[in-house]
Length: 187
Image 1: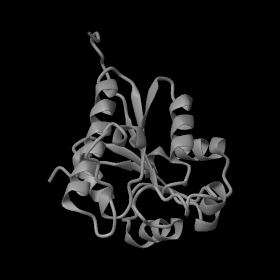
Image 2: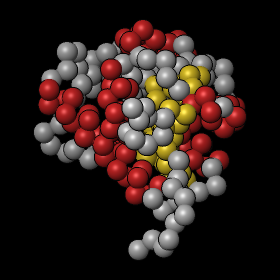
Image 3: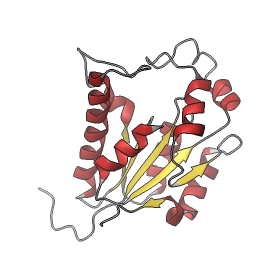
């Protein structure tokens, strides 16, 4: 088993809409850290091979429960590595009311939250077929963008990555760790 680890790794969460660049930026961030793992929320969600319920509008109770299991699974995997001294970077579609749900699951751990928020046109250009092959929920890129823009709490570090390279996004994250940090209220 893992030897005596003196310091637990940090938890980074890269959130945003489908096509925002979460996986690409999350992997690049993990590579830039001295000892880190990358946890892809989509891969955690894909472990459900039968009986899968996807989030739609309005979402079913079962779909919300499965999404929360996905988040809990990602956090659990991250915690295994964090307890061994690795920083963990989770990338997932965490927008709207689901952001509060995710942060509640993460408590009492401090989270470095980074929300990627490129303009909707850029997301559409990055994934030209995304509106035709929606990620299971029936929402368009613009629908997702509007949820992020108008229904997601302004917590952590928000980055308009419309014109940023991945390297610039990672540099901006690392230079603004204090702004990204969310610490649970212990009251």
